[in-house]
Amino acid sequence: MKTFWILLVLLSLPAYTNPTGVMRVTIGYIQHPVSEIYKKYIGKSYADIGITVRFVVMPVTRRLLEANDGRVDGIIVTISSNKERFPNLVKVGPAIARGSIELICLTDMTCDISVLYDNRITILTSKGTMRVIESELNMSINSNVYIVDNEQQLFDMFKKGRSNYLLTTVLLDDTFTKFKKENQSVRLGSYSLYHHIHKDKVSIADDLAKALRANISMIQSFIQPPDLP
Image 1 (cartoon, rainbow, N blue to C red):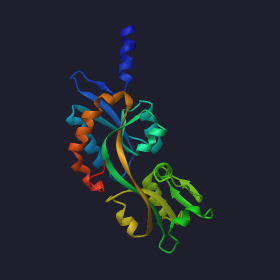
Image 2 (cartoon, helix red, strand yellow):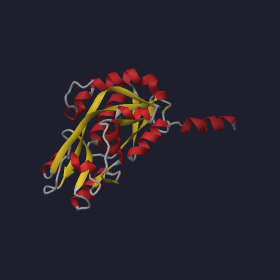
Image 3 (tube, rainbow, N blue to C red):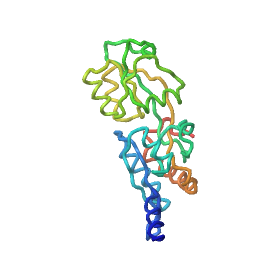
Image 4 (cartoon, rainbow, N blue to C red):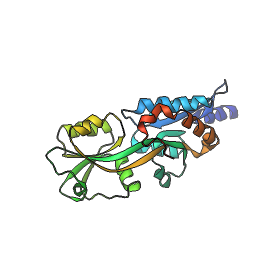
């Protein structure tokens, strides 16, 4: 009976070594147009140090909670300031994405930073975007904010006229570039994103960081400028 319970505990852990001696980890991520590219990059980097990866799609906040509590072993990418709210997350390697916060407006609407302080206006956005605005850009918003945590749903709602304004996180050179050109847009600021793992996996951090740097060309178009620290 004791052996049974030990086996049950081992199987419940997110990271484990299978009978062939290969470690496996579970990495959370959010659904995004560039997710598949990043999954290939992260998967290749782990494989280079002898670790296989299982990817699990999650909502924006849940992936942070799950990684911080150790129920998954890491997340593909997030901002480094999340360390304040999720202290068990460890940043690994170089910046692997450069993002910007964009205010997108219909063509016949006022489109400048004053929109953020007008309480008569409703802006569509997500929890992740709000977190970046507050912790990375140190900005506050006084307008009415309507939160939707699915990026595609946000854009669909904007296209259908649910609001004249949209605040979104944009990776440079991503698939939203054309959408931005069809409307007005104002860049509010930019920031860097990094791969993170749970602190219990810190023993692999140095080797993983080297692999992430070695494979950086796989996602180079999402890093501007290319020499981010």
